[in-house]
Image (cartoon, rainbow, N blue to C red; front, top):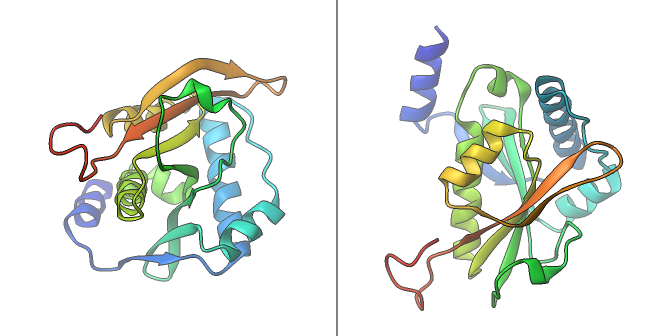
Length: 189
């Protein structure tokens, strides 16, 4: 039954819709639910999320939400300003870096093994390229192995060391080079 649902999920666009989030409470609830699910699955602490940050990101139009029917299935935030603290020198030079953060998938979709996360990251890459960015940067928890593997498969590369903090949460900084008119075909990294 789950395999049939997953096949149907990926072979049709019926019922799936991207939108710019307008409801900070819905976005924050999805983010926190995903964090709790991932923390339980990985044995790592969930990040502390501030509703004020979610509200500001939603208000700025930076949060993209994927719906399946009326329900939020996944989301991400795309911003020109850096949402994480890292010395920019860790990355190669970029003219127009854009940042992917707060990638979240509803726990029922994670539990079913769906590809909602893939849809989210692919859409983030498309949106970043459409906005004229030359690279897409992100911070990720390397202990979330499936997420890290997905980012690797989609061309994100780690720059700098794996960092830890006192709360036990580790993080890495990743970058994907986007295809631009100047770089031409075959130069994507």
